Length: 303
Image 1 (cartoon, one colour):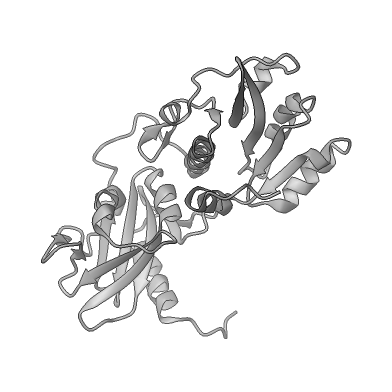
Image 2: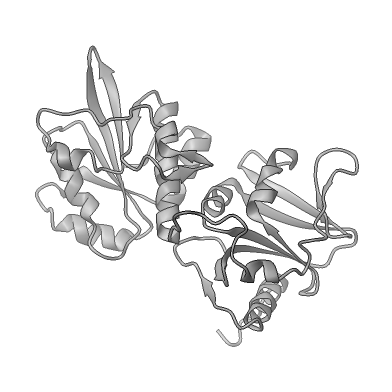
């Protein structure tokens, strides 16, 4: 590892993290996310780096990353513009408010340009986000957010809500009636209860209602005057005991219901479902990132 040649962007990232430690604050990689996102001081920071350019610096941010970062407490995006002396540290919600004025490709990759004056370029002649107050302003990361959230969420809790929101959106697009128990949690600035089509979980004849209504996301189909369960989902981000697998066991008498675990830990998934040896074939595994692709491409969930 010591002999591995670092790319220019990796060197810039390394310099950024070293600079952050000079402020006598904590710097910690958020491992549950795939993106280069760090907890620094009082903030959660997505870091992007670009080599020195002639007139502009170019960065890409995928819409899946946008959803995840926007849901964190006190989120920022740091754009390193060719040098550690030219860093735009902008509150993520200010940047994301302007995403409709930033071009993107069919895969949902936003193409962010920063000009030589370190302002973010928007659609339209001479249209910019003025970043003068954000350039090299490291104190933004060290101070508590201007608007304090009543309840602070852990990164795992925030990502859990993002994944639930994606599942609800997929179900809605595919014509299902959708339910989740976490009504006040947010996804894309909406409470999950605004996205789900059912406010109360339907009661089922062959299921323990106290367990059923706690399952992270449920999809139902209308059959005459009845709602019939079709899919159940549990989001498992913890490396501890996966209680969701047991909750979904209350649907095992419904042979048509697909039981899905959403996680990035396939090894743990196999360990847990193997303890349900009689029914382990009923449970299916889907990686976190696949949910974003399902929404954009309207794909069927993988088996």
